[in-house]
Amino acid sequence: MRHSPRRLLAAALAVCLCAGAQARADFTPWSYNWTPGATEILADNPTAGKIILSNEPGGSAVGDSFIVATNIKAASTADPASPASFTNKAYSLALTILDENSGKAGTITFSGAFNGSMSNKSSLISNTFTGPQTQSVQLGNNQYTVQIGPFAPPGPPTANISGSISALANVSVKSVNEVPEPSSLVLSGLCLSLCGAGWWWRRARGRGLALDLA
Image (cartoon, rainbow, N blue to C red):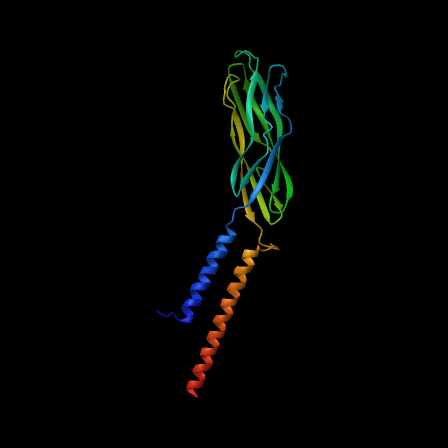
């Protein structure tokens, strides 16, 4: 069964477009590390209680992902009848991202404040993010946009499970000045060749019709 050159050209172009879309959808590998400004946030009465922020070890991800900024635990010796108070206790969390394709790294910092009360048998801690909750950094050909949150409050000091602050990281490919991968160059060359063949076929067919009419 023979197919017309026009149909073959259309099919080949469709394959190129699909292949190009697949190439653009490739996942991007990256590494990250969170560092709290302080690992202990003391109560208004420093001897009555504290909020403990973990310094999480570095991790790695591919493409978009939630990542844990810190785990949170409560520690207090205060009696429930006279709990420790936390009033606008500031903290910061610095996120360093390494773009593994380019080897470039960048750091963005989020800030917040804790309020509430805590005893040796209870924890009522709330969180307010005080700086921009969404920040971006350009690394190589990729832009990383990170949105801080959600916040999971810590349980009482007797709890085994920690609270946490997480963040959602989205990775997008920069389209300007992007250096194409070898596979993309091959696909581009193939598509250009097909387009050229299609133009030649239409021109030759037009000349043939003109000669027939003459």
